[in-house]
Structure formats: C-alpha cells, structure tokens
Length: 437
Image (cartoon, rainbow, N blue to C red; front, top):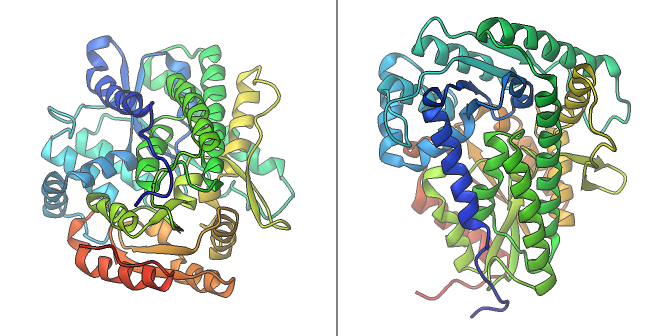
C-alpha cells in the first residue's frame, strides 16, 4: 500500500527526446556538413565547440552502457572484441565500444559512423588507450588528442588551490585549440567556446542541485530514473539544450518536494549505491522498491557530472556555486574550466580510497540512508579501485553495508538470483518485510 502520492515526471518524454536526438545528430553529422568527435564522458568537450555549432559528439561510457543495456547486442560486441584479441578483463564499456566498431554496428541503427577526430582526457588507466584503439580500428587517419588531468586534480580535502595544477590542464586545452584548427582545417571561434564553457558549468551545477533535493522524505527521484536523467550530462556537458533541460528538471523536482510527491510511494527505507550498476539488469532497483526501499542515488550519479564542495568539518557535500561572471577570453575560459572540473568528486578517489569513503559517508548521513549497497564491479577498474577499503571505512563509520559482485557491461559476470538473495537478507536486516507473492 502506498504511503505517499506519486506521479510520473512531466519532463520524462523530453529527456528521452534529447537523448535520441543526440545520437541521431552524431549519425547524421556528415549529411549536415558537420564533424564528429569521440571521447570520454569526462572529456572537456566545451573546448571542441569553438570549432562550430555543428560539432557532434559521442562519449564512450554512456555509449558502452547503452550497448550493455541491450544484452543480446552486447554479447555480440563482446565476442567481436575478444575474437579480435582484446582481453576479457579490460573495461567492459571499452570492450562494448570496440566491439561495436569491429562489428560495424551502431546500436541506434545503421553502421558505426566514422569519426573525424578524438578528444579525450586521461585519469583512468583505460582512457587514452581506449580512444587510441578506437581511432586505429576505424582508420589510421583519425587524429587523437588526450589531456592529462591526473597530475592536475587535487583532493577537495586540501583547502589550498595550487594555481600551477590548474594551469597545467588549462595550458593543455590552449594547445589543443591550435591542434584542432590544424586537423580540421577550421578557424576557432572564441565566442562559441565561451558560451559552451558557461553551459558546461550550468549543466554540472544544476545537476548537483537536483541531487540535493533527494534529501527530502519521501525522495522525489529514484536511482533507476536518475540514470536516465544524469546521462545528458555524460553525453555532452556543454550542450546548451541539456543545460536548459536541467534547469527545467530542477524546477519540476522542487515542485515534487513541495507537494510531497514520492518516486516510490511505498518508501519505508532509503539506501544508496556506490558506482555503475549492471546495466542489463536495472530491474534490481524495482526489486528493492517491492520491499519498500528507494535508492536515492550514489556518489557516482551525483558526482560523475555534478560539481560539489566537500566540508570535512561538517561531513557534508554541497553544490559548488556558479562563478559570478562568465569568462571573457579564451585563456580565462580554459583556467575557469580546468579549476571547475579538477574538483570533480569522482576524480578524487583515484588518489586514495579514503576520499571516496568520506564522501559516501556524507551522502549516507545527509541523505538519511538506512543502508549502502556496493557493487564489486569487475567491469571498471577506475571506480572500483579501493572498494574493499571503502566498505571497511563505511562500516567503521556506523553504516550498514552489503556488497554484490558483477560487471556493469558484461552480463556473463552477473548472477541475478544470487544478488536478489543477498538483497533479501540485507533488507530484512533493515527491518523491512518480504513483499507478498
């Protein structure tokens, strides 16, 4: 029996339309006289937009997740990648992506569209090699530019901001502009870049504000729905229509909180997760909801493309405020963008598991979670590094934690029945009653 009123999101259809349009634009880019670019969801895509309003992106992680969601297609791509010689223990997003190129299949219809250049960043052990191989698989004539952020990122737990760290990344962006002009033959437009830079900040700031609203009881959003909403930021942060949509979404979710509209009408307990789910088995979230448990989100959904500040004294995360003024020059925009992105929460635990533990504990406490569910995800080395230490650290801080094993993008490494059994035991331990039937 529902305890709270619930209703569908009014902007749901628009979110789907924007996502479909993004992939369609990439496919049709050359027909429109535009150019195609590939790179990581963490890439500083705003920099490429100075080449023109007809630069169309596909980012690898959400693309790999879309492949994984279609389990039969993913199996074909995985087989193709493995038969080509790529090891099964590599990033499963990456293997889905490569398999798509090798199979010459675009999950949204037709052959895989040939790209014009790759523009990415490197912090995860896979990123640079991901796009090097992607370019080679499509043709040796595809140029690649990689920005190193690993040496520039700084933990949010250190109050000092060292300008040389920001400058290190900003200088690479400035160098990349000259490189892009050379490989595309286009003249760079600073005004388009400045606008894209501001849109990037609007997107990532507003998304964090949306996530803050899930502190409300009942939670206005559930994590399965959040996956369909956060994805726009992973597709292209600098796209103006995505930034506009998030502001529209924020207004709607604020209204849901004011009216007490729940994502899960039978909310009795609140849990959070840690990183990517097994994309081919998102029904595990509906399984939780049948017990009366709502997953309010995770450091991953909040911080992959949301910008936050962590207050260690208060053990709290708050959206990073927008800059007071827009950038006025190419150099200022590069510095501002580097500073903005280097504080990304999901960068920080590449340095120490303790950083992730502290931020997850802050979410558990401030979003009033009764328990934490952690995915021992063999498909992602980057966001799974230190996960056993995270579990121990969260337990020491008084959290109830369960784990399950799987793979975000390879269905062969996930056992649905075993995972549901673990959920049963954990949810009963939270005081919930087994659903009838």
